[in-house]
Image (cartoon, rainbow, N blue to C red; front, side):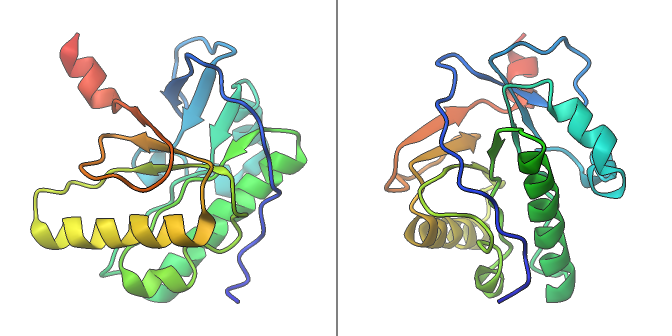
Length: 185
């Protein structure tokens, strides 16, 4: 047991034409927008340091993904556990304020599987971001994480920020990353 806070089970339908919007987006928020945190950590650090203003911002969205505090294989495990803890704590706080939360799942390597799924109930809609898979060892590590996540959490839907090069064994929706959408314009 890592001491990571447990998220409340939430079951809600996603808007059919939902859009992912980055946290602190300056665009007006629509009732089909979902706030994501696939950004550099410093851009959303204050969701932990000052949770009330962070919650006020995400409360404008249809739903919010939980903060995606980074986990890296070369970081000490206590730091990785701390970032997992912070993500779940902030997400639980938002849930207690009435916000719909889609848990963001991330991991670093197999050692992180001991805690990185903690606090997330089974059968939820989940979201992940696809790593840069150009190097074979990164792709193997990423695939192992997806397989472990699906086995342990049995997501009812997986929202993928990016494109998965393999079938995860569950229902999924792929969302083009912001940089891809902006480059296409």
